Length: 331
Image (cartoon, rainbow, N blue to C red; front, top):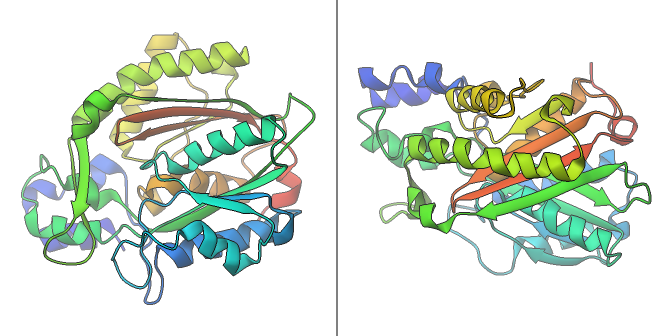
C-alpha cells in the first residue's frame, strides 16, 4: 500500500507532504487470511530453513509481538503465541514464553536470550514476532487534519514478521558484544494505545516530535556506554540500524551523533522507503534485506538502536560472523 493511497483518503493539503517528511513510499499490509500469528509463524519457518538447526534443536522460543491478532483484530491473550509457534514448527524440546516491550520487543528478546546463553542455561533460542498493525491507519485517516495530529505516526506503520536464532559461542570476539537497555517511564504518556471503541483494532496517539527530541538527547549517553564497554569508537561501527520511524528523525539523529561524538557515523541504514515502521520487527527486517543484498562482510560491527513507547531505549552491538555463509545472497 503506497503512502499516496493513504494520504489520498485524508484529502487535506496539509498532509500531502507526509511522504517527503517520512521517506516512506509504501508498506506491506496483510492479505486475507494473514494476521500477527501467521506472520510470526511463517517467519519462524523461514528462519529455520536458513539456519543449521532443526525445530527440535531449539531450546527456547520467545515471541515478542505487540499485536497478538489471530483471525481478526481482536487481541489474543491465551494461549500465548509462543506456544502456538512452538507447536506449529514442531519445537517440542523448547521452553517458551511471550514478551511484549513495544517496538523494542525483539531486541529485548535478544537481550534476554543473550543472558540465558551466556549463563549456559540454553544453547539456542529463537526470537520471533509478527506485527499486523497497518489497521491503525484506518482510524487515523478519519481523524487527521494536519501534520500536527497526534495520530499521524499511525500512518507510518506496515505489517511484517521476523525471526532470528541466537546460539552460544566459545569465541567472545564473535556474536553479541553489548546489549543494554534503559526505560524512562516519566515519558510514557508520549505514546499510548488502546483498544478502539468503534471497530476491531487499536488507536495510537503519539507526540512524535517530543519523543524524537528525547531519543536524540538521551540515546547519545547509552551509545557512549555501549562503545566504552566494547572498546570501540563510533567510527569503528560499520553499520547502524536505527528504529525505522521517519527519514527526518534518522537524519536528525545522524547529525546529532556526529556532533556529540565528533565523528560521522559510517553508515546509517534505512529500510523505510519500502516497508515503513514495522514495530518490533523493524531492525531484523532491515538486517534481512541487507544480508540478501550482500552489504555485509565477516567482521563488520553492527549497532542496532531501538526507541519505543515506554519510553525504552536500547543498543545491541554485534559482529557479523558465519551468518553470511548460512544466509546466502540473492541476485
